Image 1 (tube, helix red, strand yellow):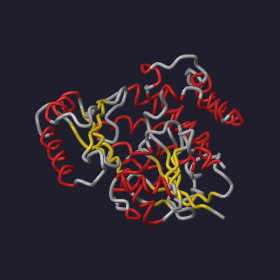
Image 2 (tube, rainbow, N blue to C red):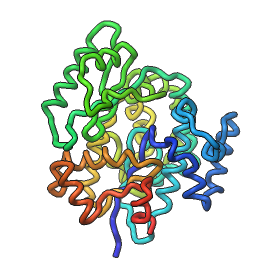
Image 3 (cartoon, rainbow, N blue to C red):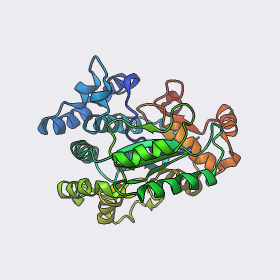
Image 4 (tube, rainbow, N blue to C red):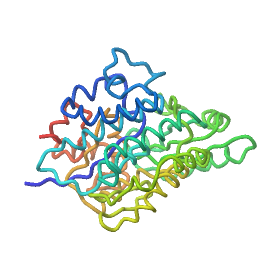
Length: 344
């Protein structure tokens, strides 16, 4: 019996210390593909993906860099997407932030190597420029119950701070029950001072992250467009859901518009991952949501996005967990206890 699935590709921050060796551990059969990626890195004078993955030691200072994290996550996530069991029918592909580039490859709109070139180029440009930063703050509590009033209150505070001279702050990613905010140092510091600590760890600054999905990234977008041709893009094999909830359909995609979105709006405007997941649920009603690796922390944002939409009557975290215990709808391939559910 066929199981339908939406494949979800993660963004930055998912290749951490436990993931060191992910490519060699899970995908020794894909070394030919990884060597193709290595060639792109070597030509740019960068350490290869396989060497980074095979290192003896993980350091945050190295592995959180955009020019290191992005290609590693791309390689791991795309390899996972290629490892799905034969009875799984992929009905759509989406991703979070940098995961959009992976989704392009997993959905067939670009080749594996073209996708790697896009990711490596944009990750390197982001790191070279490193304009601004990001932090994360929740608007729901531990139970994930939607709190639109609290969300509106936080966004008002963001607008207030952004209106102060020398301060820039804006929404970067709508990420389930959390807001990812981006801005300059003054803007981020002002928000941290204005909001109480939540869940013992928020607001949380993200190491080596720039002000993604804001107009501060306009120079990066311009340079990316100059380096990456629209010829890299073709018709997707699967429907792609972008960071606005728009669906790019196989056989009906304007590839010039897809290039324009990917290296334009997607870089400089807020990314609504919540809406992408809710569109996936409502338009495709899949049996499964499969989150590719590396890492497993990203599944929470997917689950929260479904809860916020009251999908299948899941109105809070407890209801989601009951659903997971009876018939799992969310599979994180980065979790050892769930991986076999997707790979067979």
